[in-house]
Image (cartoon, rainbow, N blue to C red; front, top):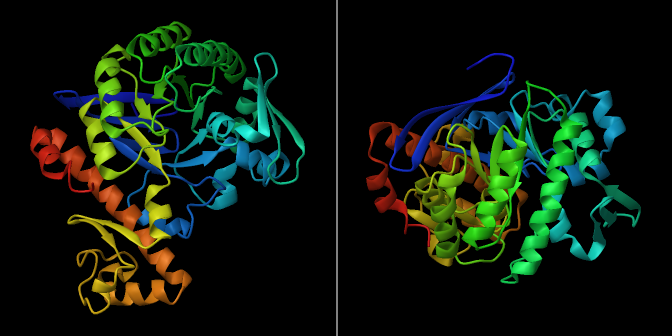
Length: 371
């Protein structure tokens, strides 16, 4: 319940779809929830106050990138990222595990030391151990902290995946020890195992034995087909503790989110809304709109006439098409803000449908709209 401690309340379910609420000292988070990604301490191209006005309740930052810039000394001077970026709501931080995969050419793994990086910025050697990752996240003053894990690239090699579970379990134990007994913050374990049910269950059981405030599904959205992701979620989410929040990392499109909610997932993050905004792609209740397309050159209709935020409902598709073709930065800013606004409206409607017992109807209506 609300107060000084991290907690989770499961309010109701519609089949496997879950309506809940996460409580933190900095505010509550209605679930299913979408977290805009602010890797460097900013959601690209959007003012912090505007992020708040989209009804965003939590954002995501990244341990590895914030360790490099601005660095722990600066973050400590501001008592964390919240003050540094002027954000007074909860923050979740990725541990740097994803960068072990995405920046694999710049690092190597040592079970004892952790991930040994050569900085992609200046080549400086950086050792990101499980302990160091937690220490950096404490300097960031994150409200939800992730354990350091090894997230392998998409593979069918069970030996590689089993090794990743071994490494991740070892690091999860060490992460929890370093985290200590801080009841105000949440510490999440990260499940690995690729697309194999038996490996996922093995990873889940090992993490439950350690004990965490929440559990994340890692190693998905790394190139597998959408139906493969849904299948493994369907086969494994029931093994996760019912009374703890469930987080699918790095997902995704509105249909990805919808399909994962159907399988019992509570939390999501993705760069999709802002990255798409920078390429002229908008998400709407009518589906995806590629505003670079010449058919919008004389289209007077807005993306969403009901959106009052920044008067977005007054900008025509024709004007946005013009900004894109003129290479004006305002195009990225307006479309990115619209996309975050849409994503949060989409999550609110999902929440309402679960509350009303109509989620299956909502799912059928929208699951194929964003293909």
